Length: 232
Image (cartoon, rainbow, N blue to C red):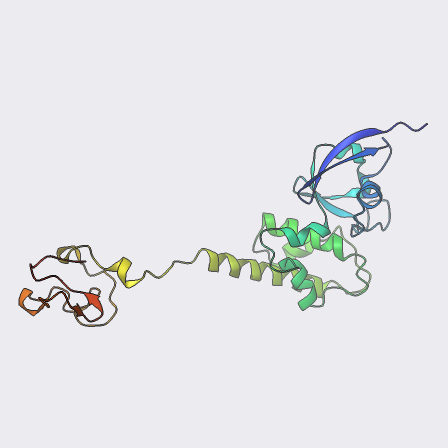
């Protein structure tokens, strides 16, 4: 009877427990025990990179690692890409890049390429072409000639940068938020909506006699009451 060992892996965010033989390769555990067949087996010698997954954030060829060595580790396979925070809809930006830039033909190397690209962009969000080629140098492709794969990762880098800029952009304050709390608090940097007597415009500090005294509205904003108080 073959001896097995119980191991626990966090796979694509979900904790999984399996019984693994000491000699079982991680790639076989992923495909056969976890039923995640997006991780491909190419050479079984560590040359092709088709079996690349992230183990605790590092790209590793899962045919060169025993499953028991990964006990307690956090694994990311290609199936988990769409669930990452930076993904929108059904695809991660790298997956979008491979689609938009035609970075695959037969598709056999694609999962490993995508995972390797993900690891690169985590470490270097703005890689140049040489850095991309270096990062995927352990992943062999027999179809595309690599150029479109490089463009796919460049696409992902640009898309992630654009999303980060959009998320971290400065919100334009509303007039109500930008209006000084009192007339004397205004300065040259106050919000100016361009309307006279409004929001820091050219005549913000209007003469008291020019303000409405009946509690009405001036230029769309509450004016001071008849007692001379400031309603801002």
